[in-house]
Image (cartoon, rainbow, N blue to C red; front, side):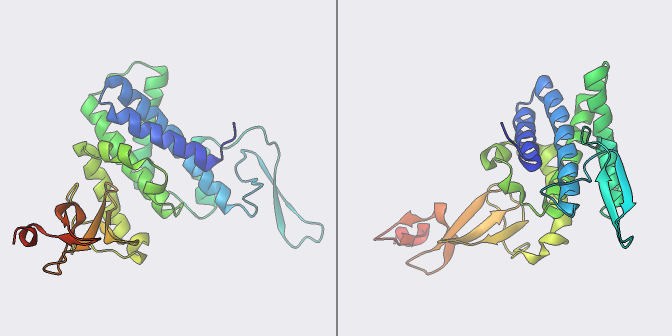
Length: 261
């Protein structure tokens, strides 16, 4: 078996989605544990990408030695040992050292779920399930923002979209994911062809959609991942969601009104 750090994180994130969607106590417990594991791997992936040689990283290791080269003109960082990579907390500290800090509010949110994870693994748990779900949902939102913003990776490229659309039906999850994408829409995603305010997702109702390219024009929802394709009505020449049209001659379509004329 061979998995890159990102592949490993992606696998964990997909299991997070599946476990939480179960809606059971066991599923919630497993989702919490997997999400913390996923975040730790994502932090390490970011550190790896910041390395001068990402293919042979040194910054992932706990103990580092900083020395001068033979000409004493530049610093060289080498791991004292390659037997132990940074812990969760050390990864956050190292990102700060590298000038790519995780915001204090996000650290606090992640820390809240990490405490719950620790209790699940080592102690008895006496928490309101709704509170755990709330902390989980907030942390999942932080995770998605991290993937999109700091790893420059679209959520839909790492999580099975069918499973994600099932998860997003959970009100607490939807609220936090939509909140995260509202932040992103004003940030790194502003370069995309955002149609916010001029179109809505027919699946979840969000206005956080982007234009999609391809044979059909349409919109893709950033929150739930639904792709809504559009086509022109051959009769009135207006655009409609393709699933609201009736096939006509050849590759043409008719809207409900035109098909009944």
